Length: 223
Ligand code: ADP
Ligand code: MG
Image (tube, rainbow, N blue to C red):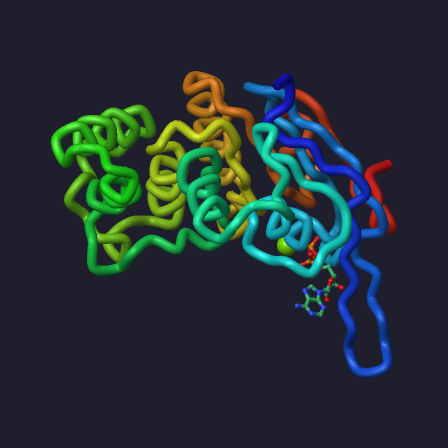
């Protein structure tokens, strides 16, 4: 299997009263292992809709999504959960860390869910957080971290289970420009070091240009 993600003819239409909004009108794309791909488009172009479909978070679409060779539409619930847990990592615009757990615990938890021992999960968590410059922040709760630090923890959590594919939806979109550039550079370096592939939604040309390849979403299709 040569692709970690393959999308063919993906369509998604939202019905609002009498109006039909055709957000995705036949998206085709592929991501190979280790490749970091930008999904570039203005606000409202359907980036989040596409990532939600690829993240197996939403049904209601037409077309084919294959993740590491497995066809999404034919997965049972239990298998969809397995693919999400074992193959995908997620980073959102807002960190979505668990507020009652500290930074390290937030990175340990998804590993425990996967059956990793607590000691191994802690070691991995410390290593990832250390690589992101957070060695001195392990026991801080999210509310005691800056916005950039919160997103770094979210990045460490997304990579904790060594996902083949990271899905990131405007991962630095809530940060000021200078912080966004630093956090995004660290995200790229760590994803590359880990050997994961990534599909990263952004409306920012400058951030998109830092990736291996840029896909432009325009009028519901990849240009
Ligand atoms: P982006 O992430 O590129 O900003 P989105 O995927 O969030 O774009 O949204 C694309 C379009 O789909 C927008 O016009 C939005 O209003 C519409 N949309 C998204 N989700 C829904 C929904 N659940 N119901 C109706 N319309 C939606
Ligand atoms: Mg969006």
